[in-house]
Image 1 (spheres, helix red, strand yellow):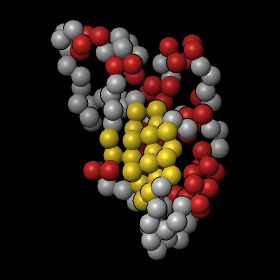
Image 2 (cartoon, one colour):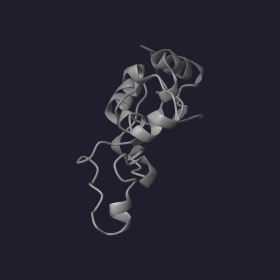
Image 3 (spheres, rainbow, N blue to C red):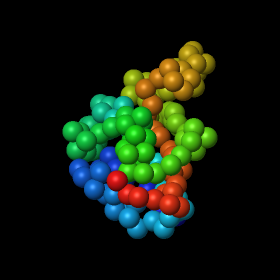
Length: 127
């Protein structure tokens, strides 16, 4: 098992790092991937407080595609999209907390975080 928590949005060479993760995992091993997306990293508060390589930030779908392209396997039940109050750029989720608005459902919002349990196939040929 390899646990990768909030790492990739800091890396410039994301594909190279993922290739190395894939290499060191045994066939059948799992990558636990949890990452902030461009929708969160590119908010005013995060840009004001932290520096990130903005040219490599990805959407949730782009991160998942990167995992697939590397050879990892996962299904929809292996993915979650936390929509935490602090990841909302406009109001930090206050309108939802006050009951003035409902959070948009998955598929109708720009995801700010993505979690995935990805598996290296037992019979794998790394791309």
